[in-house]
Image (tube, rainbow, N blue to C red; front, side, top):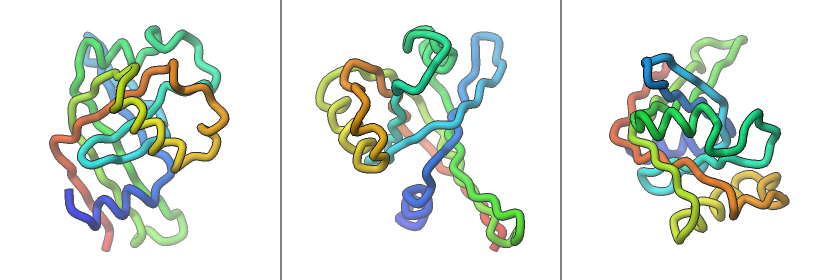
Length: 139
């Protein structure tokens, strides 16, 4: 991934994480994220959820099938010449503690002030090790 793609990704505040269940059915959720090197991190944060972290569909899906895709995009209804996206394809892991977990939380808190008030240390973080970046832009 080159510096131009990284710069674009860094300007976006939300991405979409796509996982697949054991039957290949897709599951897509919006996520907050931080990119460190060739790994994207997204927390299982304290926003209201229907299940405990381990019971969330994205976490269960990653345990069964770690291949995921993250979509980072921009849509401009007024000017379609501004349309652009980057698909980040890779393998996801769940990290729950340790140095990588600590670095991921620091990066996420630097990007999103809301995370500074959340007790994320006891919550998992999804790490996506990026294998490939595919991108497109209208101009």
